[in-house]
Image 1 (cartoon, rainbow, N blue to C red):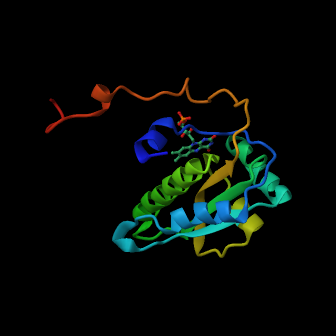
Image 2 (image 1 turned 60 degrees about the vertical axis):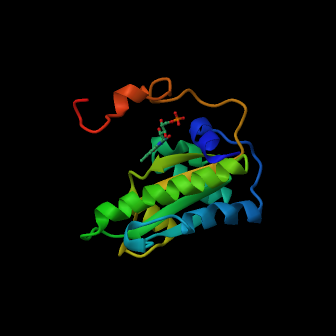
Length: 172
Ligand SMILES: Cc1cc2nc3c(=O)[nH]c(=O)nc-3n(C[C@H](O)[C@H](O)[C@H](O)COP(=O)(O)O)c2cc1C
């Protein structure tokens, strides 16, 4: 799979087959995150890789929007420092690492979906990371189930190229 194909075909996958990932597959995903670019190469992240079913289900129970974690084979929680003057860039970098990990998974036939953390304290309690850190984003991974839930946000798809892109100036 080449990169443009991967970008074009990538869809959020929220239902997974009950099939574990191999250790090599888990490592390949995490290593793609480790290799991501970051502001000033600060690499502000730590990744908590959760694979135990009970723990995955406990994470899923923290919010409706992250129900997909419960049936996944792997949940990667991206942990960055608590609020400081670099927070904007920490979250930008979080998104970069997330996208790299998702694309690495896709190359292996592994689907994924992002999840917004609406109960960061609950998540910290479950996973035991120190108070100086926070996690606002996680990603579930697994082999895609045949049936996927209906998409929450419209019918999917993307805005038209001409609607999104301006050449040279905004008014063009
Ligand atoms: C920052 C961010 C947070 C997201 N949070 C959630 C979430 O909490 N739950 C969820 O099911 N999907 C979440 N998503 C996935 C988006 O809904 C999905 O990427 C978008 O609808 C496009 O889906 P598609 O690629 O299948 O068209 C999130 C995506 C991003 C970029």
